[in-house]
Image 1 (cartoon, one colour):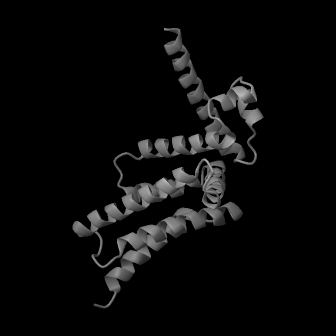
Image 2 (cartoon, rainbow, N blue to C red):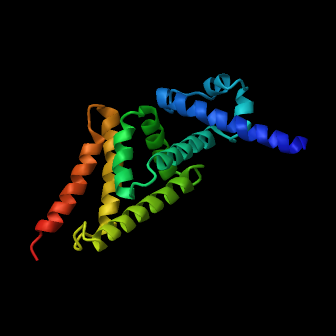
Image 3 (cartoon, rainbow, N blue to C red):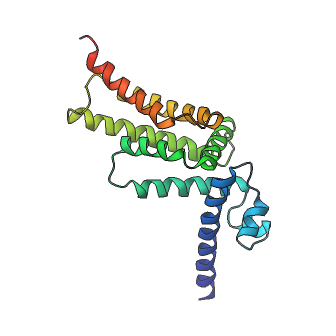
Length: 196
C-alpha cells in the first residue's frame, strides 16, 4: 500500500513540477531557467527535482511534450491544417516556449545521442504525415486542387513555420502565422492557376 501511495505522490509531484516549469520556461526561456529556480519553486532540492526527470534536457523534453498535448486537447475537433495555423499564431504569446523548442530542436538535430533526438525525429514524421493525410482528404473532398504535391507542401509548411520562429525570435514584430498562411494560400492559388 505504501508503495502505491509513494508512486501516486511521485506522479503528482512530477505533474506539479511540469505545471510550474511550463510557466517559468514560458516567462524566462530555456537559457533563463535554471534547475535551482525550478527546484525552489516546487520546494525540492536540485537533486530531488532531477530525480523525477534524470536531467535538465529530459525535463525540458517533458515540458515540450506537455505543451504539445495541451495544444492538441485545446484544438480537438479542428483538422490538422487549422491546428497547425492556430498553434503558430499562439506561439507569439509564448516566447519562452518558442525559444525552448528552437533550442532543443537545434541541439537534438546536431547530436543523435541527445535525449530529444528521437522525440523530434518522430514528431516531424508524425506532423508531416498528418498534414499530408489531411491535405489528401481535402483533395478528395474537392477543397484542394488535385495537382498540389501534398507531401512536398507539408514539408515546406513545416520548414516555413520553423524558419519564421527564428525570424520572430530576432524580431518579435514578425507575424509568424501570417507568413505561414501566405505560403498555404500561395500553394493553393498557384495550383488553381497552373496551366494544364
